Length: 470
Image 1 (tube, rainbow, N blue to C red):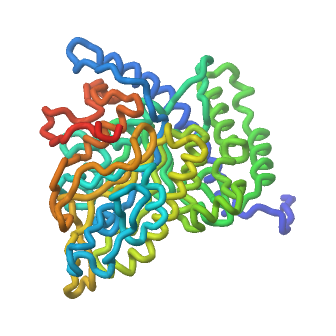
Image 2 (cartoon, rainbow, N blue to C red):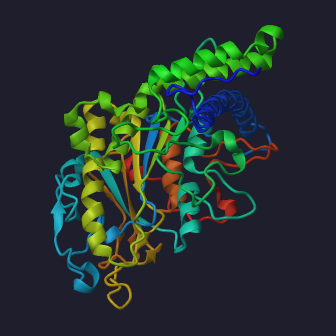
């Protein structure tokens, strides 16, 4: 007679088992990715250095000691309006300003920002504004790719700045050869960016880990690390059961691949229930600091980014979308600009208070700006469209001096009037501050020599490095 297991409230349903297995698998896959990425990146870095110093390669210039250790990128996906944010034009007339007819005077004499950026106006001495960024592209995908890589699409799919920083700075080793941290070196809060391939030809090992979830929720449920349906005790019990069921390692001892799998499991569980995973627990922060950042998804993402940099992450992107405002632009800005203002200003001030700003670059940019002239005709109802002719970026920390303005647009914000800055100029400057030689070779699967930033032979325009603010 076949014995049946009694049904009771404590039983795991099939879908719970499947869900739990998926969570475990995601954690294990990520940990395995970290280990393999560490090994391959180390080999790639050695190969890159060899390639860059070979007789046939472009010579590597000696760099000053790195001033920056990490980057926090605020990616304003969709294209933020430069004339409503970092390059206001209050005298250009209502056809251009819409209802935003005034500005916020900053704590730097003569520098003004948009009227809804009152908190950023009080920390302007800690950041610089670049008001002459240009590439002339008005399509989201191409503009995003160009702004993140410094290159136009072509034969190769180039990596974004985050992947390049990861390749050169993301896998440090202790003297024993072990990784210094379990935290992934390249993280996106919270959703993948989607407009381009972040790792390009360098491959999946350099892709960012996208957290998913909402940092402003009662529990920041990071995908693959934290399940909103499992307590710490339940996760530990599942770990015990898996350990009891996994007897293969005892049957086949001294197998390097099985040892690596065990190490992967340990990394995963440290992220799930160990000290490393605590970096995602924003509840350990005071109510005061959480309120200062703003109890919004963006504000708490800024707080999470600071915590990740403190824990050893090298590049954090906050993917803050919703800026593609062809219609009803100004109501959207009344919602979004105060949120951006509070979160970004607090991030800069908090990094400075903690002594971290000197070693952390903060880079705020979108793929382009928006048309200075308001589209008041139907069906746009006061919208702004894509505009790559001239737009703005904010940079702070990590060797960038604060309280300065680079370049200028014309009286209406329609063209570059002075000192054009191309995406490769800004990216190359950041690499140098990080101690990455822009002429060094990137890891390439076929050993091809590819510069970290575009050379003159690639036909990309350049206005030169941002020496004015470094």
